Length: 150
Length: 150
Image (cartoon, rainbow over all chains, first blue to last red; front, top):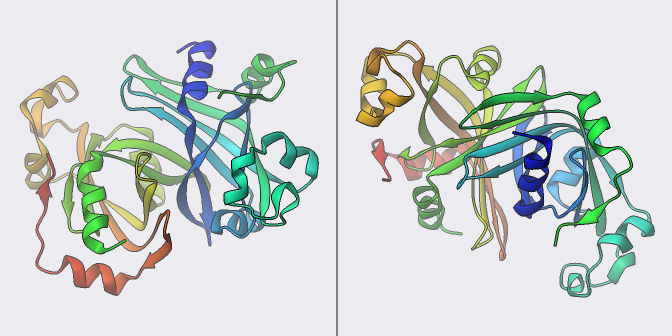
């Protein structure tokens, strides 16, 4: 797969599977993930009180998996999660209908933004499996900004 | 969600996301998963030479995640993987078209069966999040046999 094909997979996915550790054991949670900065950085809005945020505060190692069952494509990014509680991040992802989940609005302390930062990746398709290095990610993502895929 | 609703989610999924550890870091791979023994045991045929088999031989801790984006349901089972190389398991999952992936047939040493064994679970839907204990899994799965959902 070319990097543009990987970017297309990410952009059409809208959801991804976040892998993280709970007491050292692997755990998965599907998340909405529509804000991307190239292949390597992804923003996810979530509840501060959720189990994955509590777990990631203890251990930030994580993976983010984008897959398409129709095309048999899968991309697993390995890296870590940075939790953002500053208004600038929360405002960027805010939609008026989010008030359903966060009744206090953008400033709701139960609303936060997870930034997934990839350090490497592995992807596969019918035509084989390949890896992505930190350097390849950095080169592709150079001068990119966070953009919503919606 | 009732246990029968969780079983229905598993049975209609056909694929699941397997979470495992590579050098201690969480990693995900989507797998075909259509053979189930109740909620707690699941069989997956795969290549012996694959990265996830190599990783699971070192560290068997794993999770198996079933999710439905339409109904916003998700079930994450936590447990471990037992690798089976005996013919009885390989024969059970074998389909004639598998010869595409395993040219030497059922006895192909590159063909093996992963058995995921759940020790606990967590599930969520719009109406909340709940957990499944080892005892609840054992009670629901009592006297069940492996059955294909296809």
